[in-house]
Length: 302
Image (cartoon, rainbow, N blue to C red; front, side, top):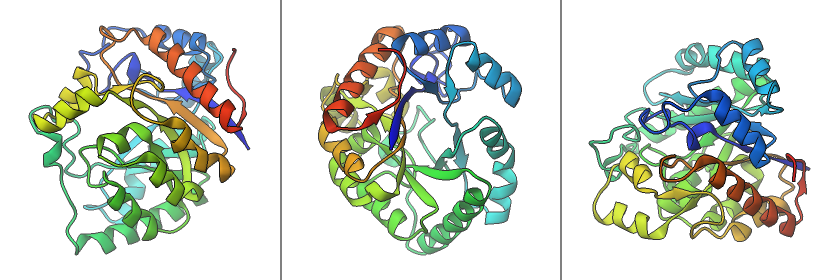
């Protein structure tokens, strides 16, 4: 199956920390994303929210619309309440041709709290788990029926962060709950991305490819930094610039016949990490890895 390479605007403008690239025009982001070689891009806060306007601005730059982030609160909401909350976002994704939804459980999350160490994230009690898994399965079945599958994003600072939590999530939900495989968040959480992809390759329906700088990660853990302080300090970078072994991490997906998007997504301070330079470097590195593994690629210009 064909793999397409895309990116995320977070390298140009950070939605959670507007001081990082807040003055960068959307047109600059889109032009540079295409110049770096990408075929598509995920949604950011600067994007239009009306389908026709969104597709028009992306079309001017030759970019496809990939997907967009949704923060759920299924621990605290019923399936019916979450359906009502997600409906406008799902309609936008569907109208713009997306087939997956970047979906995270953000109830109680500390990912956006700069005053809270990421280690102080929420955790689900034993009593919560079965209720949550049943609700997530029900929601996943509903969104799949609407033509957009959940790609569940394990994320630092949330209740689903570690490899063990991912295993429990995948084992306890139905096949319409896909897994968003994020190499950077797995490495930050202390997991081996290759082990996770080997276990769940058949459920992975979206990929965020980002690297980690091990020296920054070591300080973030030792000094109990918040997630956002870790980002500002440069814990994440693009593929090929850190410690993640992308060949090992992505080989199980190739063996499983993965087809879909792979997104170079590395939130950094654009004043320290010039976006076009890093985007182009990440594109070249990831494309090279995928070609070596034998993926069939459909991407932007060479």
